[in-house]
Amino acid sequence: MKKQKGEESEVSVVTLTPDRIHHEISRHIAAGVSHVDALVHFAEENEIEIETVAQIVKKSSILKEKIRTEAVALRMVEKEDEPDITDHCK
Image (cartoon, rainbow, N blue to C red; front, side):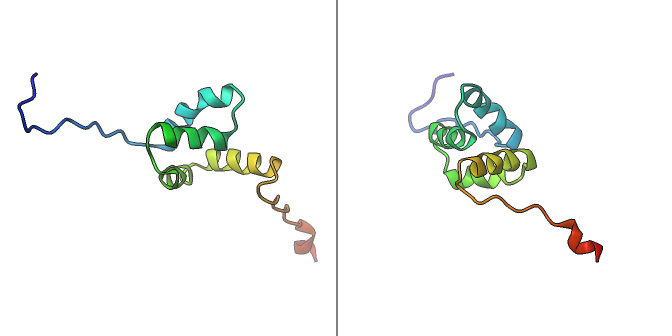
């Protein structure tokens, strides 16, 4: 189909979900790239604000935990202490 002069180009809108993001970054992770770096690359590659990606990732407990675990290992955040159950046994 030829476009007439003045017609707008068609834009495809792809819904981003935590599963789709995880699928897209999995090849980077398999190559040894960190989750954080893979997410940044994904955002840059798709011209998406990193804050938008963060909002989507927040909906996935699996991705959040993987990123948190990685951030703790890289000392980017402090490790959360495990709750001390002995406090509840008094």
